[in-house]
Amino acid sequence: MTYPPSGEPSGDQYLGGHPAPSGPPPTGVFPSQPDYQGQPAAPGYPPQYASPQYPMAQPAGYPPQPPPTQGWQPPPAPQAWQPPAAPPPTGPRSSMPWVLISVIAAVLVFAVIGGAVLIFLIGKREPATPSAQPAVTAGVPTAPGLPSDRPLKSSAPPKAPAKYGAPGDLCSIDLSALGPYAAKKEKATPNVRNTGDVARSDCDFELRTSAGMKVTFGIKTQVYSSAKDAKDYFDAGYDMDKKRFFDTELSGLGEQAYGTNRDWDVGSKTSDYTIRLVDSNLYLTASLVTFGNSFVPKDQLKPQVIDEVKAILAKLPGA
Image (tube, rainbow, N blue to C red; front, side):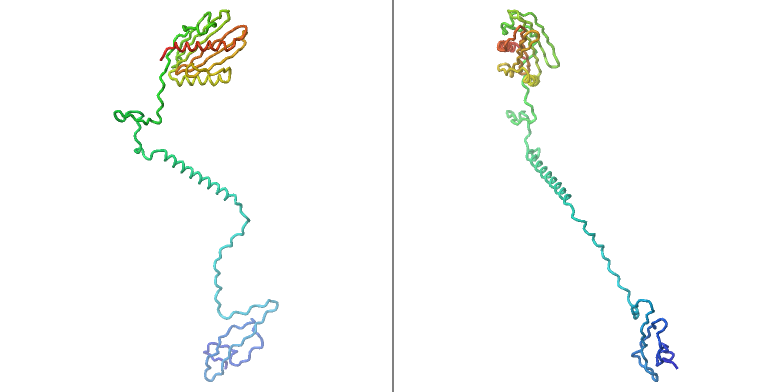
């Protein structure tokens, strides 16, 4: 009869005092046996013993193995997710981009401030609302006997009235102011015409002295519709003559006048004194030229031309 008897939890034939085998089982480890310690023995049966333990035999030629685990072991807990490590620094970065950004930001700030200041100054100069300013009437009376004293800023000053009219034929003028240079009049050639709104009148005289020296005297006038146009034409010639043959400014002849003088040899000794002037809407040129065996000093020509121009101005018709 074997122990334990049939009907017990285990039918291990090695329990109950049977001799243990003389060596380990072929597999090297017996399966674990239930522990019967602490269970009461059935009446009439011998005491129960724990299952014998045998050392684990290691197969020859293999490394030592860890002891087997007893019973069920829980699986290892999953490891929490860890973020990837930051890449190592690649080296110092250049500060140049930040410098450029700072400069651009500073320029933008100054531009905004300047624009705000400009808008503020303009706002101070302009009226806040149109209704805050009295109506400007440019001199038109706002009530009987009360003319406005605030003319429009854009109002141009009234044009000065034209002083001269078309002079007509100038060949009839008296040349006595030329003195010895007009001792004999040989020929006079008039030229009267209109160029646009400019009335032009010229006369070229061929004269001789009492000694027979050839002389010419030319008078040219241009009468404009406005004094501004005459002044513009005068200024253009003045700027040119200042660079060549200029003598001096002349007073007492219209609003502005000057003289030029030159001597040159064209087969005969030629001396020339010319006066150019502007007076209101009149531009006038008068030239006295001599042709001889010697040059004539300008001090002999200049006073004769000045006197003749004054005489001509006194005879020109008004507008």
